[in-house]
Length: 309
Ligand code: NCD
Image (tube, rainbow, N blue to C red):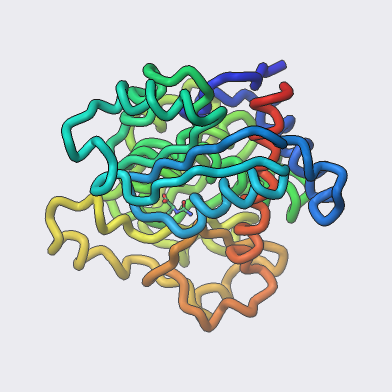
């Protein structure tokens, strides 16, 4: 059994199959109580600090909503890069020493892979990675698996396509790691220059996950139970002309999704830019707005597990 109590949640690799299922079942349970008072005081007297060094709409508010719904309080800085003592030259380690004296749990996002881990070394309270550069985004990956489980009733046996920027999207990295605990078939679709990092492919091989790669989504779409999409990650490109060349590699519109299974689901962590045409928003297979609500209960579950095991 995975022990969640008082641990930092830094990477998806920390989660084994039981760990993922425990988050899913805790979230399911909290969903039932979301509207009632029953869970409303679980975090009474506790403080969550959200420290964001990179833009966010959903993830920060989602953590904060989760904490507030459980009766806790929030202190927040959404612009750490420009308005914290980091500007004066304070190290992440020292900032962690300070913030962890104010807060009981910290959710942090940073543009550099590994920075949240570095920060956690100075923290005396649990730190949750809310996205570190092109590295990992474990809570998004968990809410994606929660969405898959909720919609499909299982994860084992599914054929899951990841379509887009497999190189830079931390969301795809987290999904791949978390899904590797299950018996899934992965179909990895990207331009050649944006393929999945070797360390993740190596991991998939080592645990016996079947995967195939392709550059064309229309070749594979009819076989997918889950179509996982994410924008090409503009901010990670050093060569902007390369981004411009690739930004419209995949566009999910009515024509493309007409080739998808009737019972498929389409997920996206949002923001969507080029890759999802709003003309498909009303298609019942599209779950990207539902995912946002799922994110709140999954983060409520993680907070509950962090404090009460
Ligand atoms: C994702 C992220 O920040 O990695 N967004 C999110 O957390 N919902 C995906 C993205 O920005 O493309």
